[in-house]
Length: 107
Length: 459
Image 1 (tube, chains in turn cyan, yellow):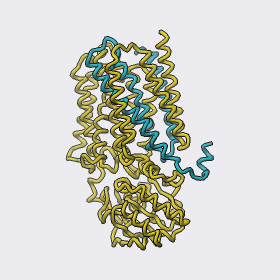
Image 2 (tube, helix red, strand yellow; image 1 turned 180 degrees about the vertical axis):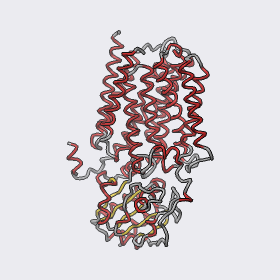
Image 3 (tube, rainbow over the protein chains, first blue to last red; image 1 turned 45 degrees about the vertical axis):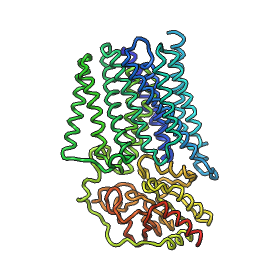
Image 4 (cartoon, chains in turn purple, brown; image 1 turned 90 degrees about the vertical axis):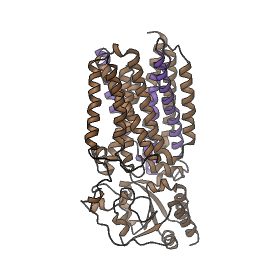
């Protein structure tokens, strides 16, 4: 990794951390379980690293097998994570209550 | 760069933006679902972009992995009951971390000797965090599922042994970093990290699981971010960091809600020193009959339900909602008081009650509901113990001194639904149970609540 790329990556990391702190601090405790499930699904993005390992040219068979297992577990997280998050979020908001102060604040 | 690479990079940028927007949507239940659709679109775009933009020659492994993963994932999404959400989440931390660790091993196999110092450093973090999170999460999931005992498993000199294992892990990391060709150092780092994950979680009791779950969430995310550094891939860094910080924020919130530090949770082994703890508890617990309890509830103006882990184990979320609806139809105002660490993971109680169709406007946070207890006629405690223990507030010698609690003891009367006269999970005595205004209703929470509903109907 050359120094310019490294510095850019560190910028990305620090800014993402800052942004994450700002955004996630605003998630109410009500939604903490779906939040954990959702961030889990999102970090299943490591799937894109696994795909390359499983299918790229000139890689040894051992790397393909590691990639295959990684693709499987990451896909479980992506599909299962998004599916479960949606199932949970669907439950919040059934039987809509009359507009409450929190509803107004969000608009 | 050729056009396909440009396309791939563009999908990564779009995915990063959509992920952030998705988490922003999480700030309110009304916008959360829409937000998750954005994240799903982002993920799909990134996957398609990768398949188009990189030189894929062998499709067999990819298709097999995607197919098997999708089937298992969909099966989990559809069939896992809400009561098993903590186990499922712990398992998915393990899967995510394992994927990161495996990608790390693959990178070492493919281009281990050509890596620069910085990349090797990132690879070390990826492997260590990924491996220890994998085994740690598996242990946490087994504890939550009841496959292994939930009580802390401890032995003498445990902290010294764990520290030695940690040092060995760091030492092999250093050896690998200095000698990139040293396979032995790399694989011993991997093996020791797997072992360290086990050792880290076995001394922790089930009651501390909300903190552990959040920490493992954070580690799994940071392992993904480290993968991003190794591969030089920004979307991995962004998504991993968002996950890592989400877990970190949750860990801090959970620790605050227990008035403990993260170190204390990790090496404290709660529940082992009970014998030395003192308590203000004493006297007799008064039992209440179903009819008396029903009478109290039926003629109350304000009732607050306080759920704890006992509600989840008894699967009583639907029974409590039925009772609450019946009371509301009689003009009683009903609310639910949710302690941040009630249950086994952050937000556990909210999800259970939402599953039972309780509108979220009735689910109150601790700070919001505590001032309302003095004007509450009946507080009904369902399978909660430590989170309503007044010793935390009044007795500086208590093991849980300083932990913020739901102040149900300030309500006009308290009915505690409890399986038996035992001390509950942490083993602490709870003076709330001995107060003159507290009465106990023994039995399984679900059947107690169902019987209460029937009794209220006959009032």
